[in-house]
Image (cartoon, rainbow, N blue to C red):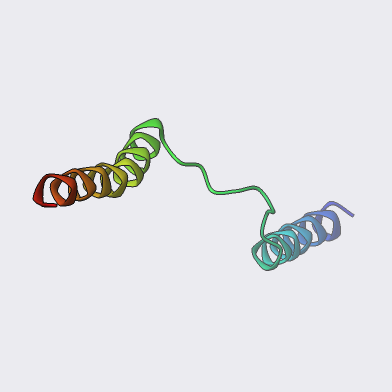
Length: 61
């Protein structure tokens, strides 16, 4: 009986692993604090450039 139980548990474990690979989580991917700061900085750069460009155009006019 122990042999059957062991074989069954091994096969069930393999089945669970295969099933787990098929179904991905719906959780969003983790983004570290440093990466979030970089993304925020990149978003701010275009806004700063637009402000500088508009100021240059006002001076030239």
